[in-house]
Image (tube, rainbow, N blue to C red):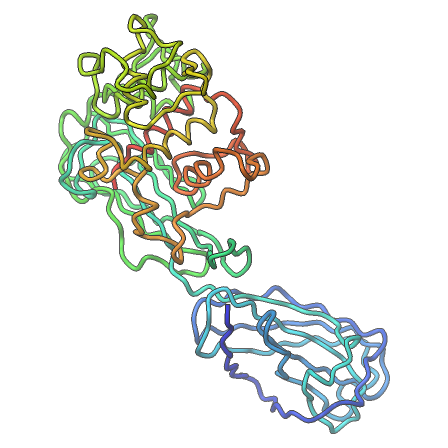
Length: 480
């Protein structure tokens, strides 16, 4: 990034002059401690630099301060104090001065201070950094420029309505409103790790006749669980306006729902299962069950903690694509979708053939589909990626053109970060370069559809649980 020059306005009584100081030498035993610096967000921001010096005593102790933009600009003289006798024989000194950020700021610039104490004769003034011996460095402090607004998106629950993202009704009374924002910068080569303050708050507001559970600590992923009580009446709204740590925000509220009257069907409880009460995936499972996109077992359970086979996954994806048992193919639609381990009498045959025909799921090679094989986390995000690459499905919840699903979002260019389409960096240590699921993991995590199993792992080769899948499917089918 090409750095732009700062203009610093020094708001103190000290006068800055610049002369050569080739004869300056560092004072042995001198140290400096600098208090943490505030973050800049825009031109005109003012900061106070507080410091404490430890000095060895004796004559001709001169304190100099320099600044630069890291790392391309040279050090520039900022301030010095060399009044005759002022620091003579002192063993400690503390002080502060004010600095103001000028015009021409650039996001991601790192602003540094440098302190030195040298033996420049009394009466001389500050010099240029080029003449400073490297051993003159005593201490440094840095801060950064964070003037960029956040980029991101926010999502309503899955719905077949097309009235607009701020006026959608929900399928049943319990659901998740979610979103993702980023305060990072991608320069076309890699993610920046310095220079941005992070997300402070979503500033979420609910208006209406009931109050949902409060949000947790602010971060880059919003997960707002809502339950509409049976007593809810009248119009209600949900809004957010994310901001970063230095106060930058979207500038206007964004509506999940804008003053729309709650209806009787929205107050009805979602479909229930015997094994999901209190589970972390309960909301996703019950909501998708209410939509008819997932089904439970004969005993009334969903199997939230059990694994998912490839045959089961084919049925789940094609149900989201609008297919029913009566609309499935009764024979392999092509040679490429003919598998020796899938027979016409198998319950899953039509689902497998349709998923293959749509390009969502492929075989394992050698004429096999592996219907009983457990689906891994790396495979499931690959299927989501395939659905995107195929341009969505033929109808219902996977119809990108009509319903604007999340899977379409990162490649349409809406709310991207500096031209880069992902809002979270997938920095996982267990996703090796060259693996078939590398890009799918980056995309699914980057847009919020999938989460890691820890801060550094995605566990791509671990079998996915049915509860985990329900959460991914819910978010992938959400509406913007």
